Image 1 (cartoon, rainbow, N blue to C red):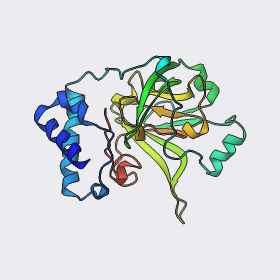
Image 2 (cartoon, one colour):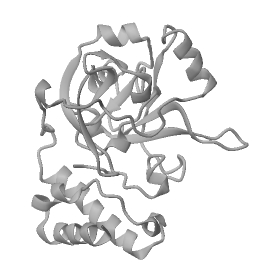
Image 3 (tube, helix red, strand yellow):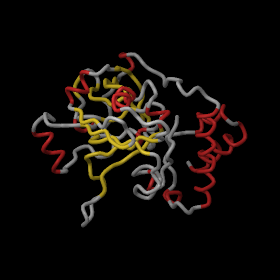
Image 4 (tube, rainbow, N blue to C red):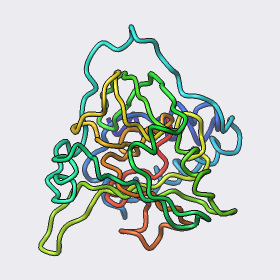
Length: 263
């Protein structure tokens, strides 16, 4: 498996943008490569930076991920990561069917927001049938319904020059005596404003289920599944994530995954 990844990365360095997109596989790397100081990993990360630069600099930023038809949905959407959060605040929302849920939008915005699910449902919606590709190697096709993240950000009035969107989640993914770590993720403004990046509240024609991230999850269709944060409680517009967690832009990124997980 490692040889496959290295071969693709080397091809990327030689071939540029044409192979950059193909290089981002869903394969699982060897455990030793999770060590941030591993020289092989550092080599791969430099190639990944080239992937990001090539896709941002040479390819169409507005290009759409492939969309499918209803007949392509042949199995239920497989839940990933945490599937039943036991955090008190989240369980309280579940008990009231999210009647009191509010999505908080803050940071570098002119008009901070506190949006109910009714507010989100009243905004323009997008429905798309896309494939979810997991870093572990599996995929599922599902229909997602939600509000484009760009609509929410426009309503909040993102300040000029803001660079990233940080998603704060309800689910504690790592518990400790000090309370644990809740899931967090970041994407840049290009992906945040992309037409297919939505805050999904529906899946396969029904309300988004708890195992799949209710009441709200991110769909950023041009990246791997771990970027698609579930159980979203707040969005923060930021300029830098170096002081957040271990400074790599997300929970799994802080533990060795790539920040830019483009496919």
